[in-house]
Length: 114
Image 1 (cartoon, helix red, strand yellow):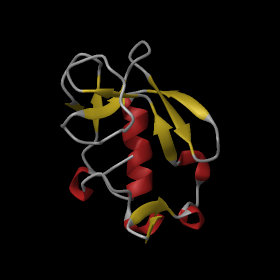
Image 2 (cartoon, rainbow, N blue to C red):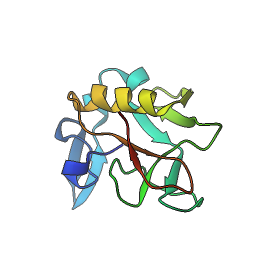
Image 3 (tube, helix red, strand yellow):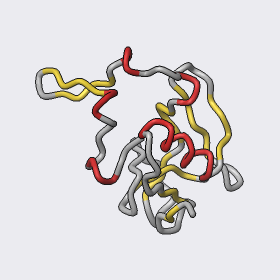
């Protein structure tokens, strides 16, 4: 879960840097059931999976890989079948603002959630 303006970083209020490594600060997460932690991801313009979800119009993103839906895993341990709108709403809650949110249909370019 990332902000394009932050170059792939999580919001400052949720991170700590130790020894040059960025870590999720667990005590910063207040609503674990609405904080996406992992999810389906794909590379732009092919069907290959990706290890990261980058919320940008670049190479990787949240992938609608299961009948126009993707799976998001949340901090509290539950997972949910999600649309691009669910993904957008989850990021807006975490970031606390209406940032631009992108998704990928595998084999196509990243698209902005309208």
